[in-house]
Image (cartoon, rainbow, N blue to C red; front, side):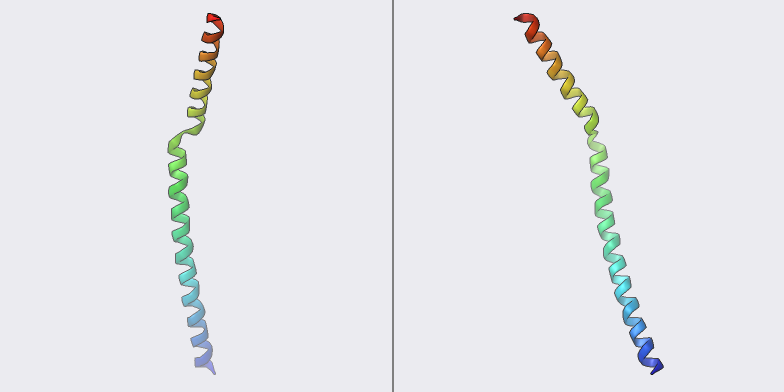
Length: 64
């Protein structure tokens, strides 16, 4: 009976180790994506694009 319980616990532990490994891999992938998004510097790009659009609109309005 004791050996059966030990075997069951070993099986549960093996499953938990596998699940943990899979979760670590998923976390690594998400971390890589987050790093890529941070490197895009989206707020700066949006600010630059808005500035260019406003500048073009003002230039166009002044020429009209």
